[in-house]
Amino acid sequence: MGKHPEAPGYKAGWCIHYRAPSYGETCAAGVRYDSLRDGDKYPLMNRLPCFIKPGETPADRSPCAKLRPPTAREIEEYKAWLEVRTGHLLTAIISIAEWLDENEGKNASTVIKCPACGSDLHVSKVGSNDHTRGQCSRSKLCIGWLQ
Image (cartoon, rainbow, N blue to C red; front, side):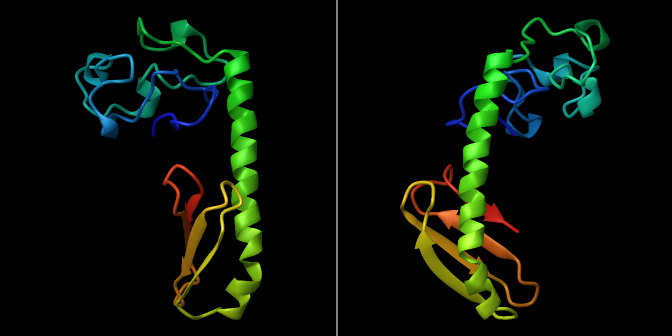
């Protein structure tokens, strides 16, 4: 997990430099994760200073000179952006509800207009469990889901 490249602001509860250790050995500020806790390459989340638990003070975490929590403004910008993206996703899912009912128990696919950008949104479903998948053709950073 890292910051979505198009997202303004930052999510509450995380250092702004955090990215999952599976994406590299360092955070975005260049701090090596294995330097934070006993040389563990993949330390438990509660051992990293990057995750800021509610009610916690900096003294409660492992020290990190580059730790920077998001500001209130950055958190609000992120929340507003996420609300819009969630709205687009819900619009897409609602718009295929009838199609899903018509194709219950069948393997099927269709293309609809992406509510976020107007490009083609490819949707498919598996008949055996009715799981759906959608992905905008414009970019993997636009709407996409796997249910």
